[in-house]
Length: 309
Image (cartoon, rainbow, N blue to C red):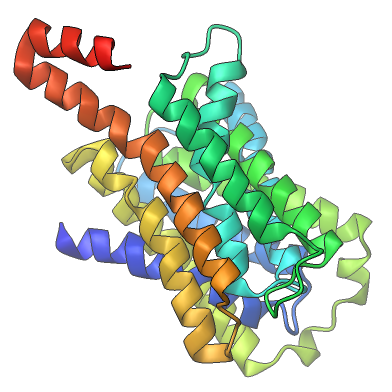
């Protein structure tokens, strides 16, 4: 289990730096399209070999919607933004995703109304994002308006895809569902790449060894291995423990970007990171903790908790 946690912590935390290296000589949507086409094919082949059923037409449709939102709109947009925004800062903005998921899950028809602590966490976390992406900041960690806009769009797209995937069920095999979503997401990624002229302008002969190595890392480790570890953990421990990667990945990405490429970590970035991750903690971990305390204490503890909120 420690190896699986190390995989989602270390690998997913390092993918932002790998994306930065990959998009130096590979257009971002082409890069992401190749990444998820190859990784998706590998996961589908692996799960088929283990006896998983081939997705039905409806399940392929679900995979197309989720893959488009999560991978094309989410990771594809992050890949584009990293042409203008340091990898660690991109990871920190992406780390606000649980906040948007909680807000969307509240706003959808029949959604779950958050308690007071969650609302405070949402407001604090969003305030941290505003502080971070403010293009008018005058320190070294400035965002371009385009980079900030595309990153915010990426978080909204990924969060919408997450809420959609929770409530519209696809393949009964999680790994098959992930592989199918990667394949269908790659279709959308290549379509976007074509519309932006990336496919026509792409010169495979101009790809640097470092970009090629980064793409290989993203395929084998960032997609295949980390997703396999993630779904294995979901079966062997609690979702609350698994989602702790949301706190670790942005911090690791900040440190790696600073150590490897000298990306700026200014006082404003540190404050923003603390506020954003504090908000994420309040939204994701504290409700589980309160529920666990109430369950252990029985009705009396639950009543006390209700009174406190």
